[in-house]
Image (tube, rainbow, N blue to C red; front, side):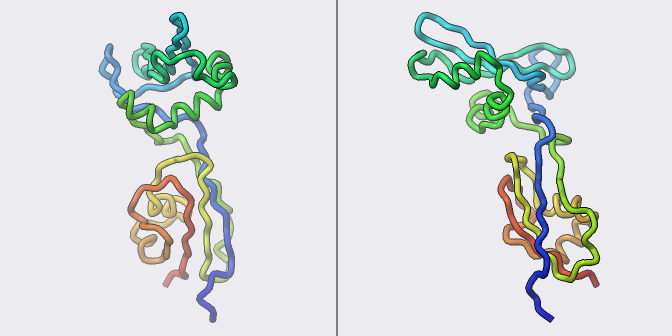
Length: 186
């Protein structure tokens, strides 16, 4: 019997909504905020622009601003980008929020709990063993492979560590695609 995987299955990790922000509210001291509908505020001071992403406290509904650009010359902006800020383009809101530089500059982290789903084929247990699975990320959702695999296969994490051969460390958070092989259970 061959030890090569007979079947290759696709798994896709998708974002279902924008993640919450772990950011302390100055009013109520809550630790969670959201972008709500995703709005930018653009302010002009002669030839300089300030751009903020507006976020709302989940607990008290207070609006705060995250600095996207500060005192930036108008001429340095691409016209399409500037139009996107003025139109509150949802894709621009998402890409801005997911930018790690914005998070570092504004001192927040993203809370991905409940903000993603795993799309995987449901019935494949009757396939020949071993089975190879390719995991692809549509968005940079940080997950630990052992938890993702346990969730997708309905196994405990100990069973995952025994039955899975993976091309990356299972207990280290990743946002990039990977492949793993499921060995037959004993």
